[in-house]
Image (cartoon, rainbow, N blue to C red; front, side, top):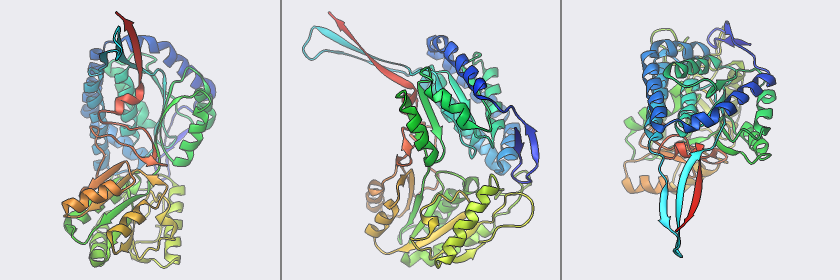
Length: 456
């Protein structure tokens, strides 16, 4: 199947288009390797992950170019993603040797309770196209650390990063059959039989809520363990006591990271009326300075969107907002010519009825609306079925904590525009997902708790 450059629409190369039979072969390999990998000493698993961490960093420039060519993000961002991916391997290398348990006397006496944690077993890992290297590492890292083998299915738009990651893991010492990559243009036909196979004991998925719901239905057939990192509709709240310089800096990070194509991207800017006009003008000025072009060109900050469908989606959302009364401060129209480009755009006076307030944009569009009171801001921020991340800018400590606790999201950036960190638990509530990736709890998603009763 072809791999396309989103900046030009041209074919980069071709990769294998796996069939359902290939998928079964990959699961066969994972199942055959599971027992031996689970018995591998935690220290050995840790050292393999540390070697993978170093190999990623040593090869960062080449890997960043691969990511830029197949996904579109500028080279500087791609290098940052490689560092981010490597840090997941280092974090879970350190967690691999800390798989603790418990020992206690039974309340009635006469016996003891031993509690241990064991690998859940062969795991299916489905990764997205927007952070192909980092999301691969975020799933493969804890699986390896816990002692689980895996079948990895990357997004069809970005298979090259995952294949490069698999090669690095092989060089680091991961045995054959422990990590198996299948690239396919028909993920449903390939993955459905694997999900229904009782040998598969875990599914970790990052992608849209709609697809996640379908996968959950399929997983119910074998009561498979699941973790889901799904869609978002992140509110970005700016109060009138905020440091506007910091708020604009945070807005740039939360909105323009990865060209706006991130589940954590700020989707709805809610700004208190007294500072709304100044905030919008500052944000439009900053976004208007960002050079647009192919990610390999020097100085480019805004690259292409992933495909033509993404451009169509953003175009329709902006057109709907304008039809409902929103004003354009910057951008607002798709670009002619080759590639999947859409300019940085700022909309103000966006009504709540606009589709852009209820749909994950996944593009470089900031939609701004105003609010008057704290209660109104919280109510509007929570008025969504999603609950991945929120951002809050205020200089009031009590207000910051009060708002953070009131927001129905799994993560909050309080006076910061980036929340992702391998050492922090990443995940959402409501229709934004189940479970957490990263942090002290990230490895728990790949472990089962076993209780052993021992009479004395």
